[in-house]
Length: 222
Length: 76
Image (cartoon, rainbow over all chains, first blue to last red; front, top):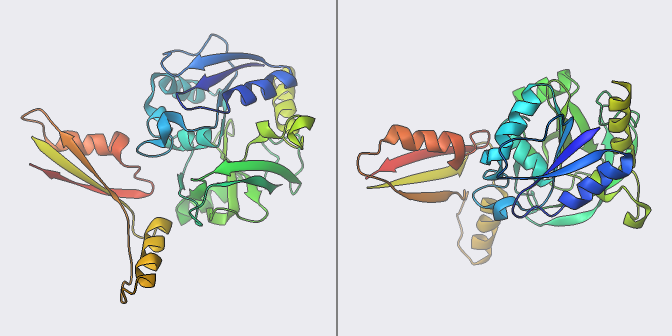
């Protein structure tokens, strides 16, 4: 698998995400936000966590309009894969590649701790290494992770089995406890929790490893 | 010329910051504050002849997230 990880001014999980991909066996290229094209032959684009552009205007809004995101949108429209974590999820909703929006946490506080996630769908390349109903422990670290979709859109997400992860104990007020959703073609995942921070024994947990391994398997068999 | 863009969370979208302000006003003794919604104002300095239609396009593309926010524009 050839992966690219986008670096925005203010990204701070870009290296962690790259390392998680590399440890699973991927070739990783870092891509700067001002670049206008992704490298040739990229299978997967990682959109990392952090505080792109200082969270000015809205989290992810400026990043979503950066030159590289035009290439990211084209990549996704061609059927390419993308994984957005935390600020990356906010950016993917701002580009319109994923539905909904992330609001300020209901309790108004920045929350940084490990939470339980239930695998709501194992029918994606990202979650194929888990079973539906599995509970995994993955850290969150966000101020604006309160997922919102309209009732109508929520019904559609449920019908299409597009909710990838839910919180076992909703920390931020997200609609229907949603922690991560996939695109209609199931190849773009956005999630607030950080699987790349649960990818090494030194992290205190390795429940995120199965996601990166499953992605590698996807491309090994493709 | 100037334009002013007002961005608010849509009605029906919970505004936790507005709620916190409402509680704070209550604890300062201001009774009867039944709701607070917090938004933002964006002032634009524009070249003469700029149109409201252009500012509306700016709102749709960047200044507001129409999934959760509504906006209105004042020109002049």
